[in-house]
Length: 256
Image 1 (cartoon, rainbow, N blue to C red):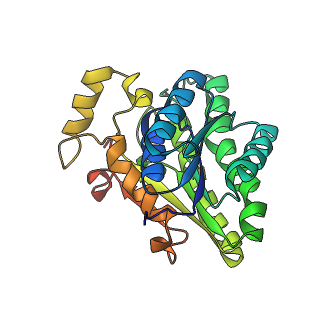
Image 2 (tube, rainbow, N blue to C red):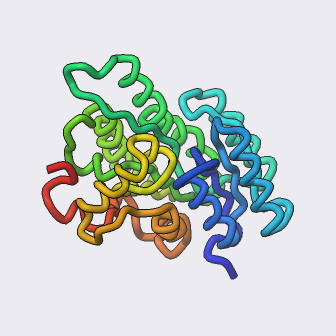
């Protein structure tokens, strides 16, 4: 049996990068997955690929804006009807922007807040009723090493990731008695389209030089942790913050 047999999962930002890696591993372990993203072409292609490889009802793509409450309501309702009650949420969608405090445009900060922080909150809010009335579930929130320590030129992004860390702690306390576990994952530098846009190979090489393992991570490095947290194997893990960063947070800060 797969480790996620009988699980119904939503993966936001699931069309590419880390989210696609999570969706692939979830399906491979037996879950049925709603791939939620604004990237229609990539998301549908991934859903088609997974259905071809694992069966016709393995995955479904839903065009979804994490910053829109109505979109969340529709996503959860559709997934409940299509696959059964949602019991896993991977709150993975996010944006990365760099900028100095002195010059960071306010609209860029607001965009990061809406996608990273508000999107995460709305996701937790949207799945709680379903999980509560159907035996509980697991919510996995994507924070970052920038949610554990500071880095120059990253104040706006880090603010959202620290907020996710805090919301996770509060969610674990509030939702734990309802059978819902809430944990945060804190990746380091992962080779994805989101990070590559900020420097390509040069950025990856620089990032690797700062990691004790001397390499950046890949979605395949992150997905197994999500599988573990989604599975019943982690049934006593709640409110945890788990870094998966090649050792970066073993010292003071990535950008020190």
